[in-house]
Image: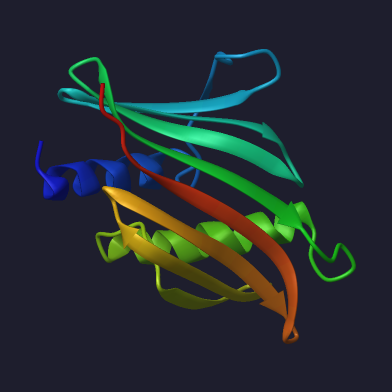
Length: 153
């Protein structure tokens, strides 16, 4: 598995699931929302709980073996400035632009329909952590923390 092929699959999977309005599949755990994608020897699942405030995990398998995972927690800090619908629209627009560049990790700034989206990451697909935020009128309104990388037996 090359880092480039892993990165390309992750970008493709992310683009067609949450950002692309992918079809939800049966929950893998009680109360979870799950989206999946498969291509060739690769498969992907994004499984999360919640809505306005949410926690989830994305996992990639190669030939049935888990090879990569990412955990995340996102939440609205200022509901008077942004709600889940507006935050989601901003995030989807920003991530669509980011994925069009062939990558899924920041630094990335995007002036969205409901605020300024910013993503800051340290590391690469093999080992990383980062934060995505939305600011409205210069005030931080939404934040998501994430981390992940390769998983090995």
